[in-house]
Amino acid sequence: MKTTDTDALRQAVLELENELADLLLEQSDMLLKQKPWLEQEYMKKIGSLEYGLYLMTSRAQRMYRLRDFIQADINLKGCYDLAQINNKLDLEFSSFLANIRARAEAVRSSLFNKWTLETRGDEVIKLIKKLYYELMKKLHPDLNPDLSANDQAAFLSIEQAYQSNDLDALQAWQILYKDRRDVALGADQLLDRYQALTSRIDLTKSQIADVTKTFPFNIQALLDDEPQIEERREQLQVEIDAVSSRYIQYANEVLNMLSHDDLLDLDGSWYDDDISRGIIDKKA
Figure 1 (tube, one colour):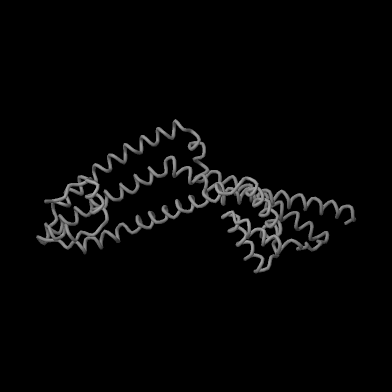
Figure 2 (cartoon, rainbow, N blue to C red; figure 1 turned 180 degrees about the vertical axis):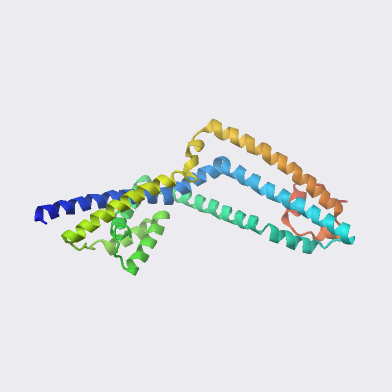
């Protein structure tokens, strides 16, 4: 291959590297920055009500099951074992509890990312993005397939710093990798590199397109539609009120079945919290 051909191929590879770097930055922005922000907007506008409906529905279902367990024991044995029943319910609703914890952690994470963005100025955010872009071109595995284990670990730390808007950490990584030099590739290596980059660009474009179809990107139009948001909020509140009424009914039925001692020892925050708020009637 002639020198001019090799130079042209090298230039084409460089352009593909820049195109892939831009796509990877877009992908990182979507997953590390836009996604938490949209999740927070979702929680603020309708997510908290959807979460409330899910929580109330689960609580009502547990109260319904508690009532049935107690009644079944009374019918069968003439008495009931509340501790044993609660253990059964804990197992039955364990997936619900795990879901609640996961949702709570997602909310905390979204709040933290939103707070870090709001406490940084625009110029700082631009600098953070610039530093991440420069480091990504040197350390992203898709742009640098022959990275050492140490470099791969460094890139994971850089991603974490970018996600948390840690300017100091990114500046430290920049100093460490500032003078890193690329090894010149031969003609055959350049051709392989060109083909690999083309394939990876197509894959990354496809991945970005797929992400836009998933939550929360697939509800972005809804989040921008205030009339539709208000309609959804009103609908959710109606559903929450209906489920709350069933919960109160089941709770009062349970209280009427329990002995005085069980009322005093009853385990479960629903009892103390809801009695204090006057949601259910305490048995005399």
